Image 1 (cartoon, helix red, strand yellow):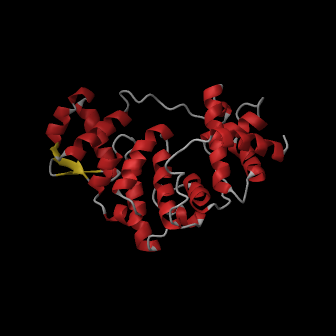
Image 2 (cartoon, rainbow, N blue to C red):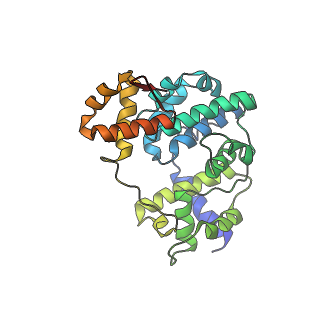
Image 3 (spheres, rainbow, N blue to C red):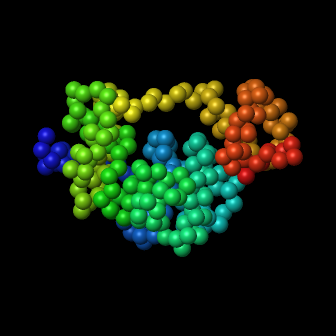
Amino acid sequence: MKVNVFRKDIRDYYLEHKRAFPWRATGSLSSKTRAYRVLVSEIMLQQTQAERVIPKYQMFVKRFPTIMSLANAEFQEVLAQWQGLGYNRRARMLHNAARQIMKEHQGEIPKDEKTLTHLPGIGPYTAGAIRAFAYNLPAIIIETNIRSVFIHFFFSRTAQVKDSDIIPLIEKTLDRKNVAEWYSALMDYGSMLKKKEKNPSRRSSHYKKQSPFKNSNREVRGVIVRTLVEKKYSISALTQRLKLYGKKRVLEQLHALSREEIVTVKRGFASVA
């Protein structure tokens, strides 16, 4: 398929069906604030559907409107605002990243990919997304919706498609003048594909089906954190309150959370770190 035909198909769909997300409505904001909003949204969107993120994002940036306000906040308050999103480790990494940005970059979120990936919780994709959506820089990024689009158009009869096969096509078709809008268009088209037909990204060699949440360690960890956000508990009282999950399992996940610096376990008590 020719690049101009591919671009036209994607753009035509986007012009008529583009989704409205609060983290996209940043045109009137300063560059510094826009970059902060993109940082928050990208961390929240990791492993979480956009529809679930919208209300939490809106509450979060209302409570912490600047990177300084986030950096200066106590982690317990940050974690309380995070509840409902899951994967609480992301809240800790976002909080740590905000503090590192204030300390090392005077509150300015870096534009350089290497510098970004030195921040907590920011890998190659998130660094590229910040560069693309906050600064309109020609980063090469790939996630599930983008992957779905390229598999659908260019690998319709291929199984086990590798990202290394897709990335040159992303680079070739990238609109380097309108990077943020182009990636938004790709993501919206990919979201449509997954609802319209069998998810094309299932034919990716990187595809992994998420394990069930019910009765998983993720569920146990989430319950522990929600409980400790309310107040400090003795370990015996905590295990008694969560006895449905079994004492051994609760203790294992409690100590895992402690190692990740999400909770503190000290002198027989557990609390948010």
